[in-house]
Image (tube, rainbow, N blue to C red; front, side):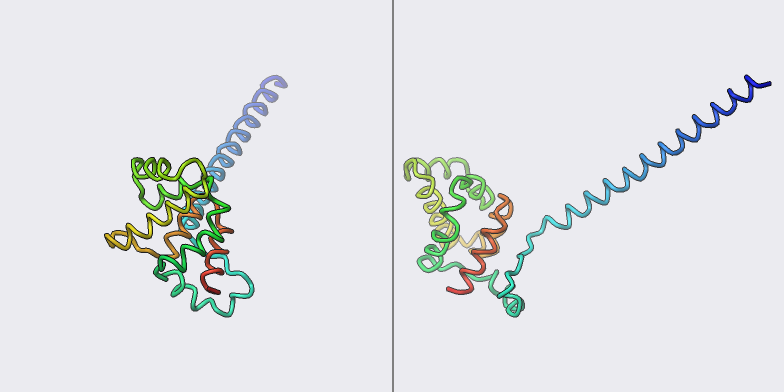
Length: 165
C-alpha cells in the first residue's frame, strides 16, 4: 500500500529530475556550440569606427588597403604603435610571419630597448615586403597583427592617424 505508493512517487520524481537534467545538458551544449560559432565569426578583424570617421566609412576599406610608404608611415607606426605595444613585439612579428631566427637577429642588433626592437621589426617588415612582394604591406596587416595581440584600440588609432596623415 503506502510504502509502494511512496516508492513509486520517488522513482517518478527521480525520473523527472533526470529528464530535466538531460534537457538542461542539451541546452547547455547548444549554447556552447552557438558561442563557438559566434567566436569564429568575430575572429575576422573589424575596425571600430571612431565617431568622427563615421561619414568616411566608405573610405575605410580603401584606407585599409593602403600600401605603407617607408618613411611616412614608419613615423606614424612609431608615434601611434611602437610606444604602446613594444612589449608585445615578438607576437606581432610572429603574426607578420617573421622567423624565430629573424626575431633573434633583430633583438641582437637592436640591443635591449623594446621600442627600438619593435621599430626595427616594423622597418624590417616594410623592407622585406618591398623586396619580395610576398606580403601585402597594408594597414590591414598591421591592424590584424595588433588585433591578434588584443590591441584593437591601438589598431583603431593607427587607422585614424593614417587617415589624417
